[in-house]
Amino acid sequence: MTHHENTALPMEYRTEQSRMNILGFWIFLGAEIVLFATLFGVYAALYHRYAGGPTHQDLINIRDVLIQTVLLLTSSFTCGLAILQMRRGSLKGLIGWLVVTLLLGAGFLFMEINEFAHYIHEGATMQTSAFLSSFFVLLGTHGLHVTFGIGWAILIIIQLLQRGLTPVTTRKAFIIGLYWHFLDVVWIFIYTFVYLKGMVM
Image (cartoon, rainbow, N blue to C red; front, side, top):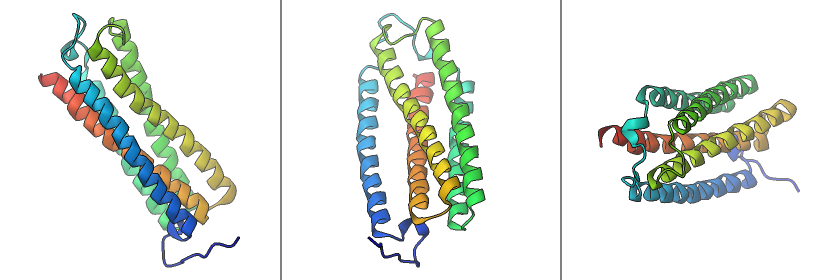
């Protein structure tokens, strides 16, 4: 079946199938917002239930968290540059900036794993208190999403290398870009309401 292409639109929007897929992904992100809103709600409800275990002030190293934040927010910027290069028709630029984005994301994950290892070494585990259970579930869910995003983007890079810029591959690259920006927005809320709030309350 031949799909009509509207060449006046960016390549990722040129076919009806691509436009429907992008719309469907926006709906999926709506469901993801509900998921994280629920996790934030649980965290807020259990915030002061330390059960005699460590509190925020006992655990958090705000310097390391700030580095994580810089890494992830910078990766959002480089992801935007990747899509800009895609719109300019540069396959090399798209792949190059996607690789930089993934390296920054991997750096973020490395630091988060070290952070969790530090907490566990200090005796702070999911079993320690309700507060720590909600804390680990919220951050762990976000970390798993970042891990999934890295693996997904690697598969898209492989397809780009094999097929070049087509309506299908550009749509996939655009969607992973939306997903990555969403994860960065979630992290801003985590940084603000988990880490910064934990330092002052």
